[in-house]
Image (cartoon, rainbow, N blue to C red):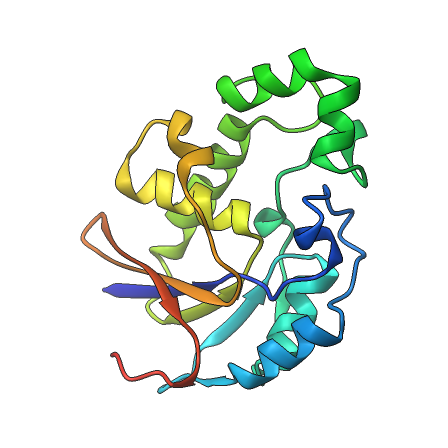
Length: 196
């Protein structure tokens, strides 16, 4: 039994461009919607479509022409507690030690939300559940969810989480069989899905 999951990062929106901790309610702007529409993508075979619950992920799925996605709480981005809605620069100026600790220690959560380690564990549990699905899944998810998938699949330590760049509107693919995931990262979207 083989499962294939294609993770798509959302189009840019003002929060992504401003390095703002998104509250999940910020829509795509005109530019993000246009870029997602230009990358419209057709899966080769039927697939179930999932999304992070954020508005930008749901709107990206729609702009890509994917059928309506099923928002999943377990695919939510990293919850950053009281930093939600603020920019990284604002938080860095107000709480420089907390930001430094957060970026260096994946187990820390000085914002009162979820640690990187907890996010990676949550995404690992979701990946374990994907083994039972003998199908293709397309998931439009937050960049930090893609990072967590890469950490889990490559069995890397969570300390590499912040070293993984995830560009907007790229696909990261995993396929699994017999208790093992294979990884393909960073494919730009556009046109028809030509693989399996």
